Length: 125
Image (cartoon, helix red, strand yellow):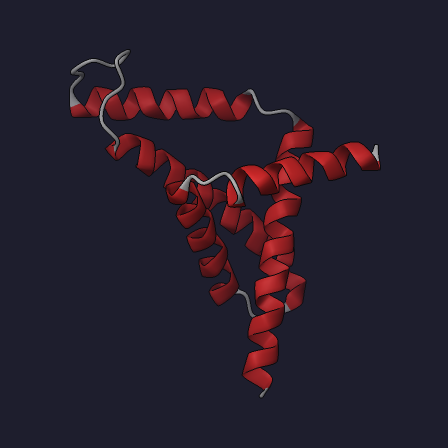
């Protein structure tokens, strides 16, 4: 079981940070940095990780919303397109398995902890 979780976390890390998709990387790092800036103590790691995941999801939604319409959407009106994108994002989220959600949570938690540790060390000097 631990090996399965570790493999999922490594797959998420590779997908987010090593895939070469610069916009996804920028959204993920912005979500992490905002969470680290808000974080005051190390005990807030759970809530800050949840905040980073919510910010990442909102950033991904906004990215897809402002991207050009896909061929399936055609020339849909702006309001309909936003609602269709929201429904598609919700369906994509509901199709995620619990292991994948846990892997995203752990991956974001590790990155937040690393950046928070660097921030803490630099602020003490």
